[in-house]
Length: 261
Image (cartoon, rainbow, N blue to C red; front, top):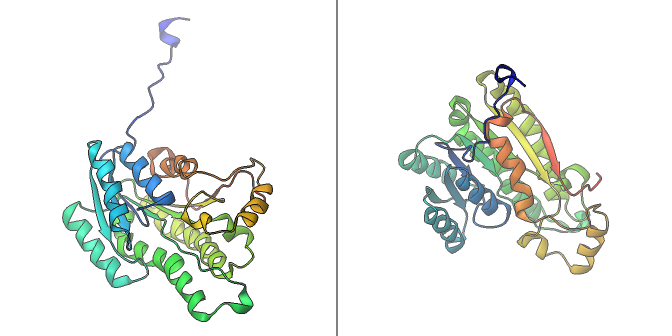
């Protein structure tokens, strides 16, 4: 082959999020922690949001900073718009505007619907869906105006198929699909994107609360015959945050081991 016809393949960028500020809600543990560490590995300055786990959040920050990257712990209950607004002011003062927002914070309060109280319903909706609204509202201008604006919402396979005893959780996670698609339309003219990741069952504190006999039944339905580790989820989120996903928006991406819904 002549030199004129040789194509040089450029190496993949090892720091695809260099010079970007990324906020991950619920980042002190579980999937959020894994996302925060991965974003830092990719060169981003990471805001580690948490509600009450001070020591766990500080541990994430220490890991990031020990590797020479930038991290900021930001306490805020995402269900409280005033706390979210205060967090936004602090981030803007200390780091600048946010390029990537990952709405990951979530809770469960499981109970059969016939026994579910209004408070149990409302608390889950307020955190999971209301928190997504509050944080997106606080950082919407940032994402809209960023050169590489990315809104990434973490939902669940439960939002797609429902789940016994989780009417509140399934509804909150299902609502994120419509929210994501609507925001994708509103951000598109600015070149910013909004996408949603719907993980299957992941080894986190949330899954550990499920009785072992129920875990066995769930696992039996998963073609890959195992639960995910948080690290199994972060690759697709890293992709969505990067320039490689600049033409993908309004999508719901399932990472669930082949679990049908």
